[in-house]
Image (cartoon, rainbow, N blue to C red; front, side, top):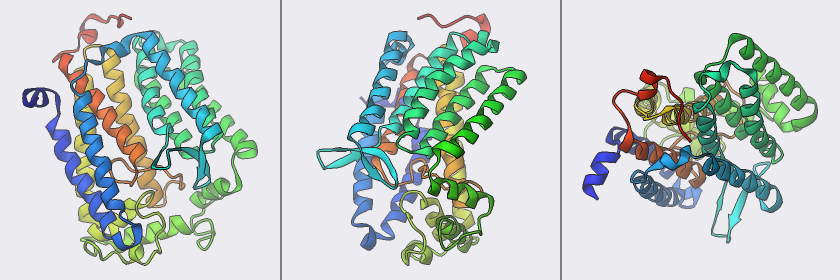
Length: 375
């Protein structure tokens, strides 16, 4: 087992994860008297996540190259999202959670994001030369669009935005012409206009308006974003110290253990702490991209790139809404926000990547031979 862990686990990633997770627990623990032992429960989720990542790192994931395996996963993802609409319960304005025996709840859309990465990696790995044909962009958009539509019905526009960003990012790295890129932007603008008129609820429109005019309604719909910006700024250079974040402790900052944990962390650790946090995230994403480039086939390359896009999208949206440059969407920051669903998904994604290391190559054979992945 020790030999297996040494060969498969990327200890640079683990070394960067541990302080990020510690930052999360310290920030949550600062408010133990108000959060009913959330730090303890998060510690349990972290332990389960590490165990799952170590287990997955020992598996051979070449079976994911088989079309019927990916289609089965996609079918299960659609079924899970449909079950949420039928059996889920409403939390924070969205019916996106399923209760399992009343003990804990899961948010299936988090795992669906990983399934979309695997699906697009499989699809584009066979068609990376033919991607210039518009039909492949349309087909991949339909696959992603079905998932996005089911998520919008919940409605969870933050997760829908993440799914669209994953699709768009993977289309870009797969090779898209400028003409088709302009077409994608046009379709995106038309879709947004349709959602604004027929899809968005009033509170979601208010969040977008507050994004454009952040100080328009700081006592109402813009309160969360305004308080997050104040909290981040109050940390200044070195922060107020662990447990001394007044904006969080006095409950001026809402959802400080989930959506706005970055703001709570910034208040306690300051600019110096934020720089350290960014360096740790850069190490993780850099190592993911490094291993993706050593993938045996285009499938492994695209999966790794898709996973990096997944983390970068979450980081960009969450940090952006904490500092007032993105609308508030409820997207968690990787490895820090409280919750088990997103944490398990992130570690599963890393576990699959590390499992692919067993058959990685120093020089990628597709770059040399320009050949397609076999099914």
